Length: 424
Image (cartoon, rainbow, N blue to C red; front, side, top):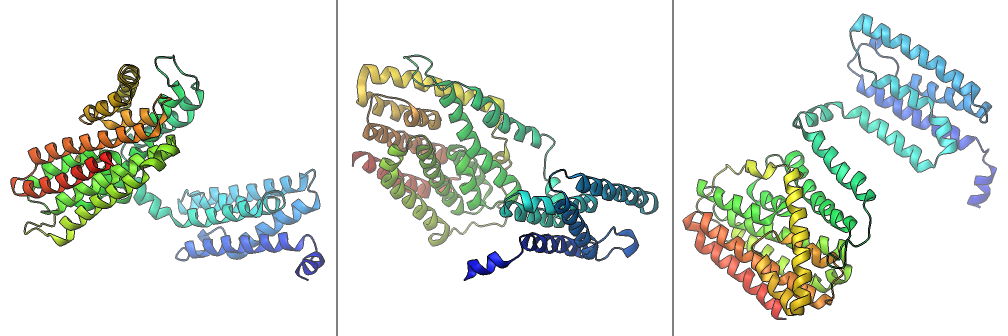
């Protein structure tokens, strides 16, 4: 029955109603936006924009093949808008063109509804409504940008969208069994995670508290975050919340590494899932314990984000260092597997823990190695446990003396759990 009703509706009625509704919505938004402006200084609002939309609809449906009438109507409306704009500059000394561009979009709704999917037209209308309303928000947001912020974005776009697609996906040699594409993909993925963390810290949570510093910093580098927080503890800030933030950073390390595993090698990711889930839960519980259950008597209101955590993650030297370590670990891992087999890789993972473990672990995830997933999982857990020992040493060395006992206990619990995971 419903289909019969739809079949009885004239074919042009629904597109016409959509044009009227969308144009009216845009016009109402313009009226609300200029509610405090003098009427003579405003180009038009609800009725004007609705009529512009209907005009575009009529001129399109009359001749949808040649479009001469639609083009002519657009030229006339564009000319009228141009006259209004110059008069606006002359009389009111205002230079904004948002309403004029919005009027031209409204004029184009008819052809859009006939030629494009309805979801796309609706998305365009929503975009117009939102963009027209967020002028002040965008102005405040733009003030947060540094001088080189868009250069940073351009770097990432070049890394991911220009260089990566141009690289071949063939192995370099039998010795270096990875391709330039896979090598650069590793840089892009790690940079993307770090860049997202950087954007969150700088624009979404600019005044990050200690705990959130641990969460966001752990996405970038849990080791660097532990070092920064340990130094911060000497300023008598937040007491045991500093320790909680350290273990939240380690929690995010587990999540970051699982994301990398899932991206490069889902089979290994599934093998690691129960271990990562248990260790993530344990580190989270330790953080909760120090944050809520074991509050310190030393608590201040000054929990601002350390300036070091706002460093740009896309510096050229960072990418060069990652690339160098990636190639170095690829060579060493290949040699160790050839000479010492699976046991050699497990031992190598313990030694690698004192460095940046990401290049080594990504090599394991995406390398075409002659070892099975169980060995890879074992090596990853070894590297993480060794790296946690390094973090513990940094934290004990750099932190406030009164916190070192709690730091030692928390890390020992996590390290022993890591060892148990390896033994299992």
